[in-house]
Amino acid sequence: MSQTISNSLKKRPLRKAPMVVIAAFLLLWLVGVATGEPGRVLEQAVQVCLSCIGIG
Amino acid sequence: METVRKWVQLIMGFLMNSSWSFPFTRTIYQGPLKVLCAPGLNCYSCPAATTYCPMGSLQQLLGGLRFALENGQYYFGLSVLGSIGILGGLFGRMICGWACPFGFIQELLHKIPSRKFGVPHILSYGKFVFLLLFVIVLPLALVDESGIGSPWFCKFVCPAGTLEAGIPMLFLQPNLRNTIGLLFLNKFVIMLIFLTWAIFASRPFCRTACPLGAFYALFSRVRLIRLHLDESRCTNCKACHHVCPMGVKFNESPDDLECISCLACMNKACKFDAISLEIGGIPLAVPDRGLSPASKP
Image (tube, rainbow over all chains, first blue to last red; front, side, top):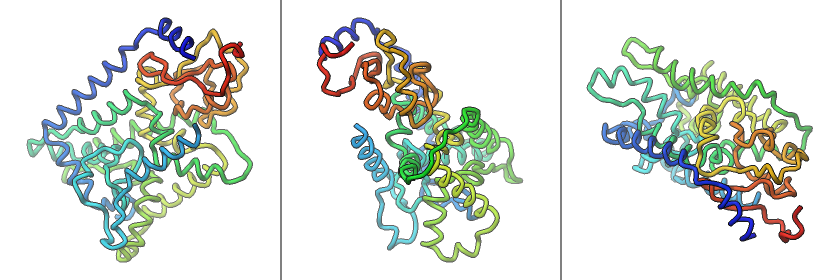
């Protein structure tokens, strides 16, 4: 088992693309937080959205 | 591993819906935890919901964008997009397989004994249409006289919202029953169609209509945790085709948009250890069937 894993480690390079994607979306999240968006999201989420659930 | 996954689905469903005071308060949870993003499709108007639904919030923010901009507020939905983007970059559609309450409900329904059918591949593009049109374009473009758009997907389609929020709220607040009309009837029928369909086909809503699944599918090639195919070990026996709940032919398309990393192909099908779970390129797990290395081909 350990030999299999070490062989795989040699064959497979570390993938950087996921790190870049995660960093990009982390930046987006930080910009959103800086504009005060989570407060607005919270305001909406604590109310029953009747049209959202097909009643209103 | 399938038992572990079921427990994870149950625990995640409970974590996203852990406010059980609603029989007494007769309304939804209104505490600060609702600033947290639910990884799966889980309506925030569900009485027990303790997190916000990213698709619902994104539609609300985009629908109110014109109004917000007129008031000097730059609510483009970036925090929501950032949250699900981080989750997508980490897990991709593994979230659908391990953390989505509505996906879990469909899996349970699929266990009802009946004749089982596939889902035509062409329908899998539907979810991208819902994401683009109903979640982004229509809430932004079609606004009322005060400049506010509607959450089109939630309002006209989402069966998770009807099941988790619409129906429970009708029980909790009887006065709401007087307000139900064609809108509710439309959504109720859509919910019935998907729930019935889930008995006969595996995860039909996830495969054809879920905008959150469509968003996570965009990360199939760049997600940190994913299944890896060792082509040197694959014998093209196609055993992985028969166990996949999403209809993925894993050996032909290892980064398929539909793969929810449920690990069925790795643990139940492949006898040649050609499939492994990796994190950023490093193997996280290889199938454990008690085979010694010498017994492997």
